[in-house]
Length: 293
Image (cartoon, rainbow, N blue to C red; front, top):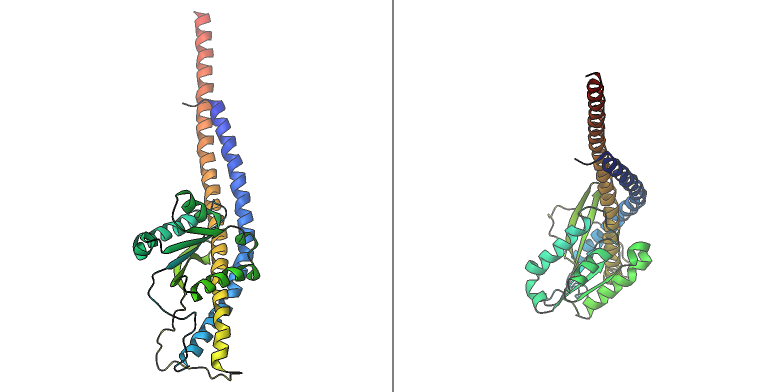
């Protein structure tokens, strides 16, 4: 059985950890509030922009194929995954890493075996994980997430778009956590390029009537690059909000676990102290009885 001093030291250690996790929870909650506002403000705009693009694209007959809509055999693949620069956020990073590995072993097994699959990671966690394990064709950026703004994300979107237009890649896939709420994130893998054609809708679906200046084709050529940039930025915002939510939840659980552990240790300490006092009383009484004899 541990001594009273050992139990006391452990109680002090757990309480110190509890203070740290509680502080981290509050910091994550503060960051989450701002990140949540950003992604919730971005979603309607991004959704309407994509809806407008698809509506216009489907209304143009015999439109010449855009460089970002060209579908070709997926011989060369780029996987773009978004994780975090810091840990202590539960399974947030592990889920993304697991998804990338699953795609390497199943969806794009042949491309990876032939060296025709590149990986680009936003965030240190996945980048360092795959780099240390000597996976092939690994690249990434660890600075953008510390200063996540649209203007900072645009060069990356343009880089990926240019690589696809130059036929360096035949398909580009995004892997990230979509923010639902503080306790729930949905892991998504969605095609970034080529642009997914609009789904067939019922004939009864109402079509908006637009007035175009100069013309539909030129407007679409302007909209496509903008939509792609917004799509990447939205994925980064989603992931950042998910990270803060996952960290806040993880730190909340850690704080609650520390409280429970403190109670158990305090009970163990009280029992040990009571046993020690009882033993001392027995010794005193035994000594007194011996003196009487």
